[in-house]
Structure formats: C-alpha cells, structure tokens
Image 1 (spheres, rainbow, N blue to C red):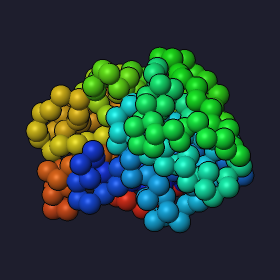
Image 2 (tube, rainbow, N blue to C red):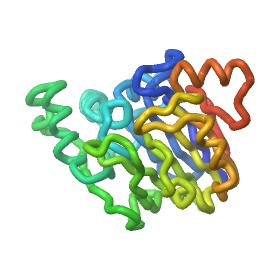
Image 3 (tube, rainbow, N blue to C red):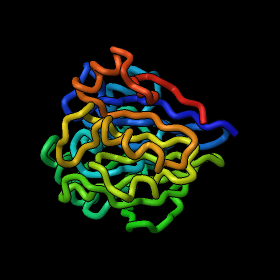
Length: 248
C-alpha cells in the first residue's frame, strides 16, 4: 500500500518565504487520514490544498509552540460551524490538554465550552512508549527544543509504512534513533550554517548524514537563510514546499 504525505504547511515560525506553518497530511487508500502538527495557519492551508478539515479525525502533535499546535482552536470552530459530526482526537505531549484550553480561551473566550455535535478528545503520550492512535501507531522521542513546549519527534507506523518526523530540535543523538528504519524521515532544517539553540542547520545535519539509517530524508521548517540556498541549488537533500506530495 502507498501512503501519501502532503506538506500542507512547511514554513518556520516566521513564515519564511511566505510559507504556511507546519502541518502535514498523511493518507492512504482505505485508511483514515492523520494530521501531523497543526500550526496557527493550518486551517487556511488545508482549505488552500482543498482538504476538507472535517475529514480529519486524528491530529498528532510534536510540541506546544504556536506554529505547531496553534491552529487547533480554528480547526474545532470550523467543524462547529460546518456541522461536523466526526470526532476529533488529538495526541500530544504532557500539558497538551491545558495548553489547548488556554489557547482556545485566549483566542475565543468562552467558545471552548459551547456544546458541539462532535467530541474533541485529547490524549497525551509518554517518552518512547508506542501507542495506538486511530489509524496509526505512534512512538514519541524526546528532542532538544524549548523545554516548556515538551518537544518530541514522532515515529508513525501507518498503512504499512514508517514515517518519522523530528519536530523542532537542535542536534541530539535521539535523531538517528528516531529515523532508524523509516521509509521517510522529515527533518527540520531552519538554518544553513547559523548555529541557534533549539534548531538544526544544514551543515550540522550533513555532518551526521551517515548516521541516518532510513530510506529518504526530506528537510522542512526552513527560514529565509535556508530557502535562499535551496533556490540556489546548493542543497544535497530533498526540500519540502507547501503543497508538495510524497508517496511512501
């Protein structure tokens, strides 16, 4: 079976290159779709890609920064006004329930408590504990990013394929473990050679390239510095773009 990963949004927090915030759509024939991260601009990006938000029953989150989970309130409200009935299940790290509630209340005071025709259920994962989540099996690996966001990379078994995603992280020995055996490893690469806490740069990634035992690597979450190198043809790895679809 072939799985298809659509980069609904592939940008960094500051929408480098005019790209949408992180949001990936995973689907396969006969399987329920899965959304991986749901950044603040995700609802716009989904509609731009002609993906019905109400068709998404499961969302897996890597961490709790707004460009990765901030679109959830709009996803819920869109479902409410579209008369959605499909339940919405969300899995994320520790504190996902309270951060979701806080974000919803800040953006639309009182709206979280409105009765809807669909259930919104949030569960939380533990480090390196594999759990069933709708159409997938998910294992979360701790990575190095802003600690308060509970950062993790995700290894997702879906439709007989393995897709790994780094989330936001600087270099950590966890990354080769996360990518091991993956059919596709999606890795953040915010910078080209700038060293910044919490994020990867292309030079560092290439220094460790031989450590990744996976079929394919695609980089995402690129800022302007990195995008300039991509457009200049200076990059030796596949680079994501908004709307790009990868068959796995």
